Figure 1 (cartoon, rainbow, N blue to C red):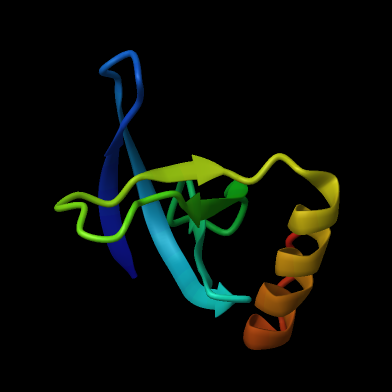
Figure 2: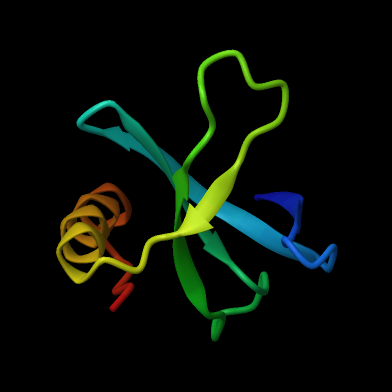
Amino acid sequence: MEKIEFVTEDGEKIEFYVEEATRVNGVSYLLVTDSDKDEANAYILRDMSADGDSLADYAMVEDEVELEAVSRVFEQMLEDVDIR
């Protein structure tokens, strides 16, 4: 499992563990957790980067419809994980 560091708009550094990545309708998403333990919090991040950006720009998915749809995709990919 890969650990990556994100920097918030406030300059705060946050580390997440990448559980899985996918593309839905041409948009890239990451399923990340805040711990490598069994009881971790899971988040879905959407790639907001523009073509040609040198750094990736991810934002947490907050739209309920989008979150539900992408959650189902990740659940199918991971089969034994309930991310709700």
